[in-house]
Image 1 (cartoon, rainbow, N blue to C red):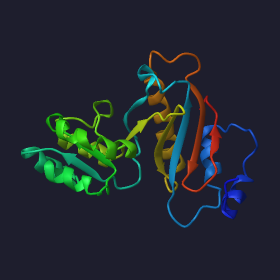
Image 2 (cartoon, rainbow, N blue to C red):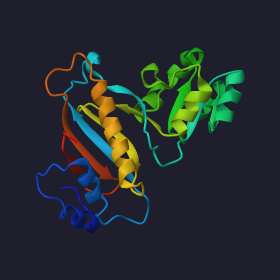
Image 3 (cartoon, helix red, strand yellow):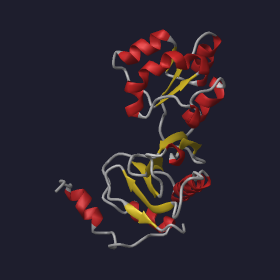
Length: 228
């Protein structure tokens, strides 16, 4: 049995067994937990009725949270020429071509999002085994392969998030910080749920959104009612 801290177990006692909470109530309950002395990230997990083994049922993309993510997002850009300077002006922590690729091959992964111009993907492809498992590989589906470097870097720094369904059919994403006003968290969560529903793969059959949970970094999860 997995060990749980005293704080976690005390928080779990506040949950009503098997209850699905309306979103506003779920967030209020989350804020009553015995939280540690740092501003925890709020995460959402959506269990979807898809089979990720089939490429036509993959759920993947990027979404700009209306109230932001509440943390500094570190962006790197694979580019050449004038686009390197554009990336730096937009706030990228690193931008370049072969030099940046070598740095990552050497083990440097101190960033959250990687963006690439299309012409660089031939070289960036060899980083797949490093960036793929980290969820940081640039992809056209997530909007991270683009020539519009300046605007895309700004979007991710201002709260755009990437998501991808895992092998169990779950989509995980951060939706803000515990310190956010309740109404901001409600808006972020509702907007993300709506976005996922609107991007349902045509091949997905039956009940698409099956379960929804929210949690903070070190708290139990709170089940959210689907009609939220």
